[in-house]
Image (cartoon, rainbow, N blue to C red):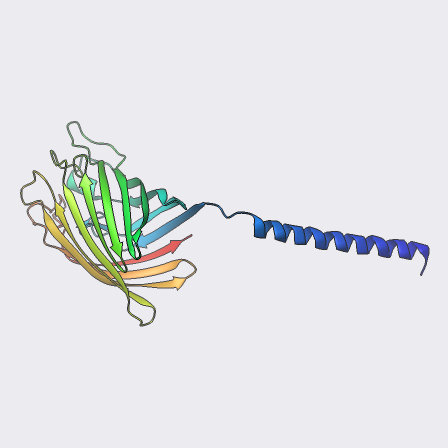
Length: 258
């Protein structure tokens, strides 16, 4: 082999060695780099309609929804969730508000073994145009949740008027829910019952309930199908389009998390 060939071979060997060392260093750095204490997640959902606490929000029409969460390893979190709506326009033709924007923050953790807690504040914001004298639908609630295994209980307390009802501050909502693995086709059984107490609205308080199934398909995709019903008074919960907003319905969703 010529001197030139020996030189070329040495250069190639050195380069390969340097590349291997660089790769090893990069891998070592990746393995030793501390994991971030922050976790960011996002989600988007297509729904056959939007129901909140059993009540129509899109007049039985489809809705698109989505949001994101930023969580810290300590248990603190903040987030935003949004949905298309029509209930404000449906309740008053002089209102134009097509979006619900929720902003929340809180702290969650474990009290003992499988007993968990979640405490925070949630702001419902409805940007749009409203006539003079209209009571703002924007609502702020504080909440406290407790969970044990697949069952959770959550109490929400309104610090403001509740969704545009005059003089309804300190209205309350009680939410009991459970999600259980059926062991069949990867389906989960989801059950819920809630009670909405509306202050200073005659016959405005009601109970809602739901029963359904959901399936995680992997890659962040989930589908769900639920039956939803309420005992809300028709005389109170009928909109200007003559639709009873508390009527029973089936709700189908397709969600993707990131």
